[in-house]
Length: 480
Image (cartoon, rainbow, N blue to C red):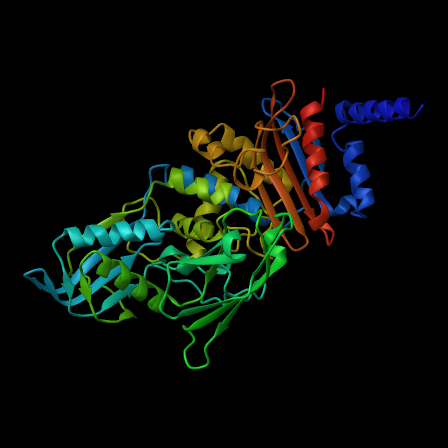
């Protein structure tokens, strides 16, 4: 009798998944989970549209402006690909402000940034290497960091969530090297019953106090078993002691944790000196902020990877700072260099003109920084869905969809939908903040149709709502 009941229950659930619905009726399996978590329908925004159909399959509160969290990156990256082009690159220009004689610069080396979001450790090493290849060996003056291409308000990096040293809170900078990050790589070391910590890069001003204990526990959510505290020295705000407490499982493979501790002058100066010395160069000056004189010819120009590559990092791994720097680039156009400074107001105006040109006037739209790391940003589920419909018919569709995480394959969806039919068939962007959960993108359903799905939840139980979204995806796959 028990087996019959179980089978019957399974049939009922499958029927609920496959039953066609009116356009304003929630699927039973989704409604059931909402009720369990006491999330009212008024706290969700839902839009499901089969590509090629004139009307959506399902809409719930689809016209309400809601916080989309990181799903807002879909707007920024789609606009970037169309307005700037998939081959767009950012330039970083090096100038010699002085005379070069016998491989020695008698003056300052100036680095002017134009907002390259991919000037990471590898690419900054490449920039230094190519500078060394010009024949320059010694710099007698200082390293001048030119940040003047951005005219944006100063930010408190801890203002969003009181986590000032987390790299996702690093504000945009026209010359941002490696997100000012120090990466702490953690390795289980069973032979010594300890946890090994390797930092890359290693600033001279950083000390580590490793109190981690190696355990036999399952790896799981390893970050929940430890705390990492950054303590600034009283005498110098750029000198830190990082204290690691708690435990780390021997069953974990290498895990990494990133912190942004130093300011730009200290971080960039230390890293430049380290890389320059490794390549046989000599530099004993200081790193300071300044501007490149207008009359100087470039000594070397470094090009970022193309935008098509950068949007993959933005969407697959929800890179906030890269999204913010792409958003700022929208306001200065797709010329190789636009010497007018980038501002948030310019970018906002450009995006709205672009949307209007597509007959998409999103009156509820609020963009603060283009990344979704915001309490203010708003868009409706319907308009996000319309945006995804437009992107599917855009010339940049291949680059755009390829940038999205694939269910149970990579990015932020690597560990989701593994045991469902949606595995490998959904390209979707996730988003999460306190009281916000979001999912949007494309699904190929069980009948081979491509379906656009947008699901926003703005509620104090949103953190528990992943199962609700997963059920909606399964319903969309099975629907008739």
